[in-house]
Every structure is written in structure tokens, then in C-alpha cells.
Amino acid sequence: MILFISISVPIILFALAVLFIGQTISTQPYRGAISDHFDGKKFVNPGNVTAKGFPDLFKFLLGRDQGPWTKNYETYVGKKPKSPEKGQVKLTFVNHSTFLIQWEKFNILTDPVWSDRCSPFTFVGPQRMRPPGIRFEDLPKIDLVLLSHNHYDHLDISTVLKLEEKFEPTFIVPLGVASYLRKNDVSNIIELDWWEKTDQKLHITAVPSQHFSGRGFYDRDKSLWCGYVLEHQGKKVYFAGDSGYGSFFKEIGKKLGPMDISMIPIGAYLPQWFMSPIHVSPQESIKIHQDVKSKQSIAMHFGTFPLADDGMGRAEKDLMATLKKSKISQEKFMIPDEGIPIIF
Image 1 (cartoon, rainbow, N blue to C red):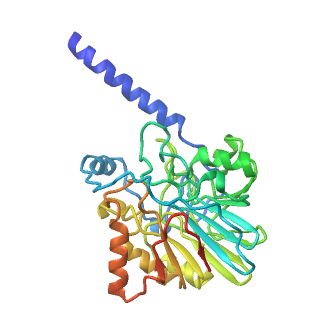
Image 2 (image 1 turned 180 degrees about the vertical axis):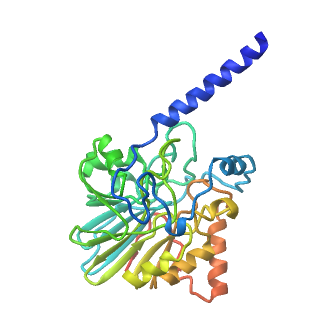
Image 3 (image 1 turned 90 degrees about the vertical axis):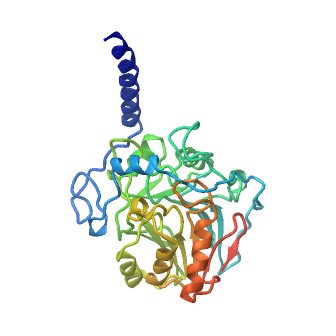
């Protein structure tokens, strides 16, 4: 009996600690009007597609074979970005889903992550395998920040607070994310539902994606996820955010396309039985390219954090093979180099 108690007490204490931490890091749930993708308590995907639950998560974690990942800090880091010339759009891939978009006089960041880990903790969690393509201190004045959802590899609160302190930009976020930012003393926030627009001297529309949200154990799907379409002077730039594949991409293309430039995820797609509801494969990435009628697409969401079982380099190889099979030029769907500006 004494032995049983001596073993069970530490297990119980550990479980209670985990539950307490899970509660502490959970975000405040969104409160608002019921819609076709919000039932009053949680958000749902188009077609009610759901991400896998905790039992499948444990199955995934126990059977992981994440392939080869090598930490490489010898890679190129770009110089301080220069402003584009009139009429140009300049995109610089930082890595993962972070881009610096320089359009006329506007400097925009997508899902900025400069931390070493995408995790609630600094000592554990997926670690950065490559340095950011632009040093944070080399960033130009940032006017707008687009956040697609609240996962740690897309909403890095440490980076957000550094941006707020240095630049005081406007943060464009999906429903339910604003309360978390305000809790962290971020002030200038615009919150959008799917298909809602805001005019920040360029037009920004939040568009559907197929994913889920949550930063703790108790806030699953309590805030929205999205992509964005930016319009200025007759040109359109699409940031797809984080998503599984669905027919809504054709709807985006029909309503807002054709896109001049699209940033489309290609990585974190294996094993497909677990990842397919929330992440696209390279084959599906090409479908998105076609669905939104993209003239020029750029890959993202690969090669930085070991989030799934497609090892470093797998997504890029699969994308190139599928482009060749589909008879689509690699110039039409680029794999960007970190820190090297692409000018359109």
C-alpha cells in the first residue's frame, strides 16, 4: 500500500501540474454572433472538417519518424532590406510562414516568428533549424502584421511584443485573437471574420482556411484561422496561412482571383492520416495554385521547424517532382531562398 502511494502521488502531482499549465496558457474564448462557421462556442471548418483529437495525437507522437533534420546556422542571412522602386512588390522569405512584403511605401510581415522555438516554453518544443533570413534588427519600419491564427509557429508572442515596442504596427487578426494580444498590451488591432475587409491604404480581406486553433488544453477552436488577400493598384497578393485542402480555395479564386502572387504552404504533411485535415501536401499546394488562379506562387511552411514526419528537404523535392509531372514550370511555383528578395 505504501509503495502504491509513493508511486501514484508523483504521477497525480505531475498530471495536476500539466492540467494547471494547460489552463494557464489557454486563451480567452471568442464571444460573438453565431454564423455558418461559429456555433456560439467554437469555430468550424468549411464542410465541418475537423482536426484530429488527442487520442490520434498520442498515436502520432508515439509512432513518429520525423526523418532527418540538421541544424544549419551556416546558411545565408540577408542584408538589410532596401525599399522597392515605384510599382514594385518585393517579397523576402524569412522562413517558415514569415515573409516581409514591401509594397510601395508599406512594409508588411506575415506570421512573424524570430524565436528559437515555436512553443509556450523556451526550453522544450520544436526548435528552429535555420536562422531567420533577415535579422530582426535589420527590419525596416513595419506598418502591418498579418496573423493567420494563434498557434505558436504562427503567433510568436515574443516577436509580436518586440514589433509592438519598436514599430507599433497595426495587427490584422482573425476573430478571437485580439483579446489575447490586448492581454499582452498590444494596442492597434483589427479583427476580421472570413470575407471581411479592412482598408489600410491597401485593401485586406480575410479568407477561409481549413485548420484549427488553440494555445493550451482548453481553448481548442475558440478563435478563428484564416488567410489574407491584399489588393493595391489593381494587383492582388494572397497569403494562404496554414491550411488543409478544401473546395473553398476555388471559391477564393472565383471571388477574389486571379492572384498575381500567392504564398502557399507545402510542408508538415506527413503522416497524411494525421496531417491532411490541417496541412496540405505539395500535390495539394499545386491545386491551390490553380484554384486561386495564381500567376506566381511561392512556397512556405517548410524547412524550419520539425513539426511533422516529412524530414528536411522532403517537401521541396515532392513539390518539384509534382510540378514536373503536372508540366508546370518551377518558375511559376518558386521555392524561395531565405533572405534573398524577390522583386515583381
